[in-house]
Length: 191
Image (cartoon, rainbow, N blue to C red; front, side, top):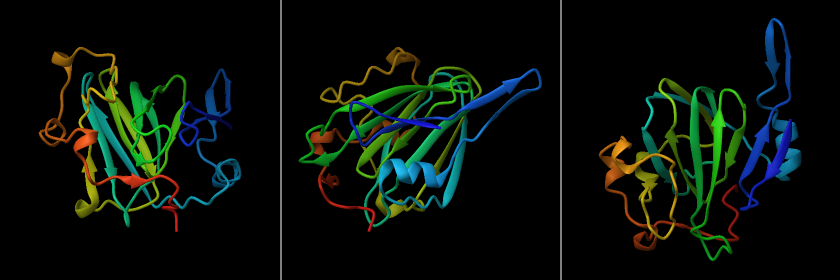
C-alpha cells in the first residue's frame, strides 16, 4: 500500500497494491500498522458505513464536532465518485481550501479525511457503492455541514447544477464564513 499527501498534507490518498491474474484480483484495502506508521499517530476505526447512489447524487459537505469528530477512510466498491475534503480548521494555512480526488472501483484509491475537515462526494455513475470507515460514532448533536456550493470554496463538482440530487438537509447548509461550528488549527482532536 502506498500513501501520498495531497496539496493539503493532512489529506492522504491511499492506494492498495493490487495482485491480479486470470481469476481476478486480491488487494489489501486497510492495514492499521502501515497507515499509523505513515501518519505518526494511532487511528481506531469503530464503524463501517456504506451507501448506494445514482449518478448526480451529492452527499455533503458533512462533519462532526468534538467530542464526536471523525476521521474517515473512504473508497468506492462499485462505480465512481468525485470525493472532496475541505479544510475547516480556523487558522490553518489551507483554511477553506479543498482537495478533490476521483475514487472508483477501477482505480481502488481511498482518501483519508482527518478530523477538522468537511467531506462530501458526488456520484459519477449509476449504482455506485461508496464505503467508509470512521473512528467515532455518529452523533446527531454534533452533526454539521457546509454548503456544497459555497462560492468561497469554489468546488467544481464536475456535474451540471441542474443534474445534482441533494437531500433537503444538504440544500440548507451554511456557507463556511457563516459557520461558528468549526475546528481550531493546531489543536489535537485525537486525545
